[in-house]
Image (cartoon, rainbow, N blue to C red):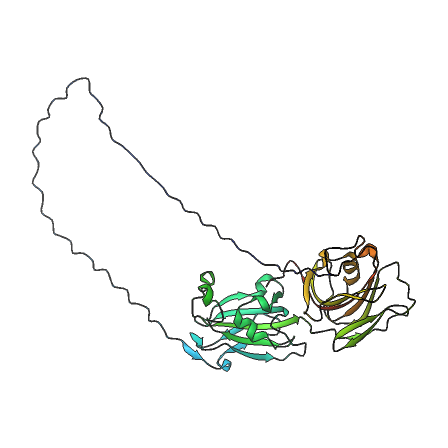
Length: 356
């Protein structure tokens, strides 16, 4: 199974309307049928002298002094209030400006460690250290937000890499590690040079491998052994290929259950049931993310309801895999193959929310 890459983004288009009003007019003389008599001049009365008014002086506005920002060198200068997984408030002696990006774990989690390319399900609040104003919050969207650390501003990636699922992280991101390269974000009142303060609760994240309760499979199935996280599939001699789909959990994870419309992040190995040959594997190149709805029917039927952290053995008959074969992949796949998959479910997300 060659997992197709998946990336969902959000595009926002703002249209402006300019209205120009042009006025026009004209004068014309009307011809008269008979001459108009010359009027007798009327004496004009002498004008009465009046006192010239004294103009009222316009006061000169006093410019608002610009307060230079205080250097932010220690995040203990900020006070964060708010419970886990709730919108927070941050207090500080605004304006503040960090010379380098800073981060600090406020609540210590115990989950897997995030990498620079991990998917993360998070709640966050963002504040501008120039004004202290909140400019963004995930709580506006009504649920935690999935993001790829490979697709966010550099300071965000650097601050969350190496953190744990379950951490609350306070970070101060410099303009250079934020939006300076984009000229700031005027719609959010983020100017070039502004330091941004984020508080992030890491609700869930991409697992580094399967973890959970081991499950003993029934006899007669391909066997799976593990060496440093990489599975090896062995087809016992004389084992007959089943006619129906087999979806056997080998390790039962404790994370969220996969839904039919999800995008899933997995490591997997694909093996030919007939001879045990490995046809494809992601363990050497790294996890892949794809829409479950675009994968073979055996994956769609066998992985729904399985949980993040699980390792699943799938034995997929030809009708639910590649009934007509696939000559466009390497190695080519002739029709009629029963395929065996080992799938480690590392992350799942509602595809309509995915970004990054």
